Length: 429
Image (tube, rainbow, N blue to C red; front, side, top):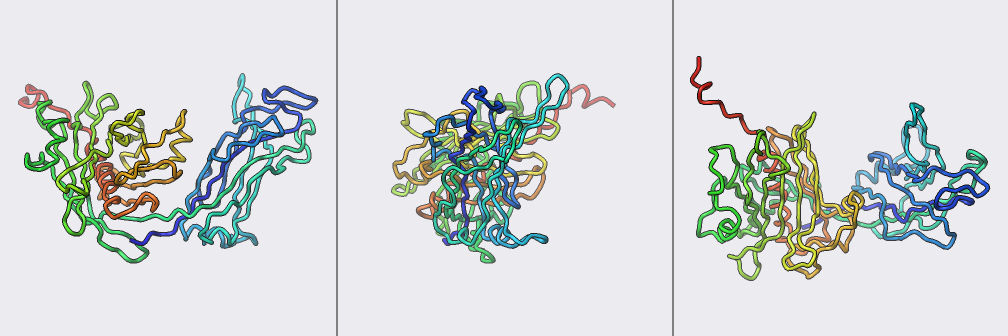
């Protein structure tokens, strides 16, 4: 399998130093700043990202180089677009980091606007496309204006800007998951079959090794509410030789919560993602658990929450991703440690690094996988991207294809249930 070129641009180790300003914002002969300070990180063609910048009061202090505030992932086409001058521009695009004090806010009916402290610019150059790790900038730099408020000058920004090769494999289901399509690898204009998937809406046979999980987690007798449930769905991923390498199946049925007609957060449906044992082909090992439910609002969303199962690990199951996908338009499910760590209030722990089949190691930061799916009632052909560093053999890919299939099927499994008609009403004229 040949990967496609991707580049990870990371911005981290942020810190702001302003002479005369202490950590608590007290005056020292100069005006106090409104903290916390924030920055907008801009790169042409990409959504603006924001990050908080801590104040560094001691001249000897250097912000942590491992603290990543923002990441951009660039394909070859993105890099070509950035290196091409704009219509009225003579220069290439720039990475811009614009620093402000606080946020726009209102106090007693009076609007208080944030103040612009300064801007850091780094031009996109040919070294961005060399395919090698390179630190573009690391250290302190003056960004302050000549005058600011009461004449404060000399604001300094600390940052570390780094480029890393981040090649990915790209796969696509050739049709809807329920139609048991082939899964192909995309390499430019080349489309190479790599897997097939087999979808079933019935319980697995007692002879199937998967039935061991079924009997222990869900035997189908827990509920008796007619067709107001979705259960028994399972999908197996087979390699080109026909051997099953991974599977996903519903363990907790998708049912409407009490008093409503949709799968609610209080009672989510769940999938178990399992991998085959390379030494014993008839054996399966739990790998992950995907929960899904419907979030109601002006526009409904499907929430997909994925845990990596860590048998015997002292930290228990590890939350890897919790993503909202538009029920109408679809969206992207992803596992990206940069995004998850920034969104979480506490750092994400790393799963075991024992070298197990398809084990996800967060020691390698950043993107792990993504899966783009369509909304309800649309012909979804999941598009999957997978970081090459998480793949050691073709079987590793299969487990992520099973996860992608479960995400896609969850969009349909979370569709609202039809209301039951009262018996008296159904026979009235």
